[in-house]
Image (cartoon, rainbow, N blue to C red; front, side, top):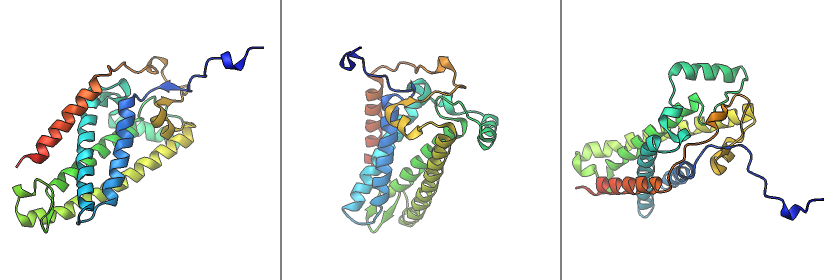
Length: 232
């Protein structure tokens, strides 16, 4: 009998799909969004926390945009932004209770990621122009006080649209997890995704991403956003 202590640890199930930077981006965005939503008050110190969370979201979104071209295979936009015909076929298959066989983001989920990134960007950028009783974003000085005051409604409206998109995204993740028997939330935590029969074997190995690429992109993103919000 083989001693269990001498046996190697079992490998995590599924293929490695999401590299560390992609996973960190996802959960940092979740955290910053919750913080920004809970501190959306026109008073100190909550507004300061809200503002810092917004800056953090801008840094994360800029990082993700660059990472969409420089990251691993499944993090790249070219991997999950598909023609609408492919999105239509995917949705038809889902409603027929068929598995999608998507290794990374499915065709519909890919466009949802793009929508969430766009709404996140629009929400934070509109917030940079908001001004109300001397409290507001750093770009409010570039527009008239009346428009800066109106931007508060624009900022809130886009934030509400973003919240709706977040709930749709969560519902889509839950539906795909249920129909395909894959824990997608867990996959975004561990990086590993259970393979299906329709998965392409050659797609199960992510492109190697050097360890220095993500920190450099993050540094670039932070400096770019710092320069943008401190310009007067």
